[in-house]
Amino acid sequence: MPLGRLSQWLLLAPALALLSALFLVPIVWFIAGSLASLGGASEIWGETQRTLGSTAIVKTILNTNVIALTVTLFALLLGYPMSFALSRLKGAAFTLVLVCIVLPYFTSIIVRTYAWMVLLGRRGIVNDMLLSLGLIDQPLALLYNRTGVIIGMTYVLLPYMVLTLYAAMKAVDMRLLQAAEGMGARPFEVFRRVFLPLTMHGVLAGCLIVFILAIGYFITPALMGGPSDMMMAMLIEREIELSQNWPAAALMTIVLLAITLALYSIYSRFNDQSGAEGF
Amino acid sequence: MTMSLKGMRSSRRQFLVGGATLLAAPYVLKGKALAAGQVIVRTPGGVYDEIMRKNVYDPFTEATGITVVPVAATVAKLLAMFESGNVELDLIDTGEGPLIQLERKGALTPIDYGSWKLSKPENITEEYKSEFRVTDFAYATVLAYNTDTFKGDAHPDNWPDFWDAEKFPGPRMLADMATGTPNLEFALIADGVALKDLYPLDVDRAFKSLSRIRPAITRFWDTGALSAQLMTDAEVVTGSIWNGRLQAVMDKGAPLSFTWNQHMLQLQQVAIFKDSPNVAEAQQLIDFMMQPSVQAGYGAALRYSPSNTKAFDLIDPKIVEQMPGNPATRDKAFVQNVAWWEDNRDAINKRWSSWILG
Image (cartoon, rainbow over all chains, first blue to last red; front, side, top):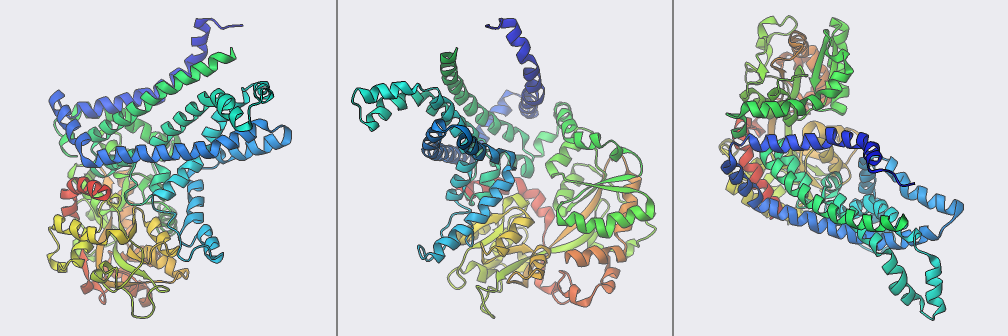
């Protein structure tokens, strides 16, 4: 039975109240207060030009986007086959794989990042193994550089991609694939012309959610990155901790928030469409 | 930045009140922590807390009945507390730099040297005490190296050697901007500046020098823990590091060593937050901490040098040798000019961000 508009809002009210009190109000307060402390509009404009015009922030925005895009791509390449396998599994095997994907969520992200640092170090397990197998004769630089950041972040964000894709794949009517085969399509054609288009909204939703989460990342790049792998969140933290420059931090926050909200509006459009099919 | 803190204080105050209330929530929730008979101390955390608990806090509680509650807080958080008039902390135990910052904002209460009963102010090294701050110990940033990589005498022995990546190849580390004071001093020494001529730092020259060694730097460390880990895991084979952190891993058998040549002396200090709820108890704790016997305890454990000159007599001479500021090494050191850093940090932070991304 469809819910009335009013009861829908009533059900949402507690969550909305919580979000407003703990997220919306503080962030508006922080941004408005920081900028107001500068003085009038011309001072704010001046600080905006200084902050957003600096080479550091331009390069950091670029860095952040390149890292987030690369991570999204790797998560998709790894996640798509994984989700497909998951959507075909049943019973105990399905539960086992699902638990393996979801379980890391219950572990602190710092612990998981440190685990990667043990694996990827110059004398870490991966390099030790490759060296002893004679595959390399110098340790590979896998940590404290861009490679480390990409590996760490892809790992942490992969479950979001897998679960989003799984939902889309589970909804595909398998009889359509059989019908395509029955009409003589080769397996690759079935995939390209039937399965892929039917799961495309999942791909887009998964990519957007991973990208959105990636551009705000802090811990993994801070611990696993090299000197120049600076991301937006790290730069914001520095402005506050080292310079106590709240207005500059507020301006950077606005940039990050704007990118996130723009992408989220695209994401929610796709989600609405896919949701509509269910009702 | 100072500019935003003046003039528009009232609006800034209003908005910070809310923020600081949230920040302070954990202490308020503890409830009892605010009751009389307690001192809330900002500490660096980790092993440091354990050593201080054993050598200072627990004995203090035993002697006075006053409980000590260590909490973590960054300078930004302390300033936010102060700006909002919502001070929930009594004693601040941190580097000289952050305390100068707080002192300049008028956030500290004078130390009541006259009320000391257990310690004698005249026994504290003269340069180590001032109206608002008193040193609990001096520590050093030294040049460390891996003894598996550099055997015998063939190791980097000074900062020009460290900068010579051909003669002493291998990945390196230096302190990051996030520590508050990246190693511009060492960059200048490597470039030929004499220890006595370092300040005011020639920032242009320092960054040019840093650019030369940059390709060999694996990582700029932002915490003491990371620097020790990078050295122990041999992620880097040489680097700048705090002597106490290094000694701790050397004592556990890591193949590491260091030179006292051209080391930088820095101070860890305590100060009392203005308007703090437990000023009297905090004054008592400082008095307790400054006793020779107490300083000998934590100084020996941390390998950091006591500020009370009488404490040295109570420490094993072998351990005194491993401490900075002892007579044998004192002339190889320079003292970090923290006031210079406080005046220039904003500009250097901007410069650092562009340099590191360049």
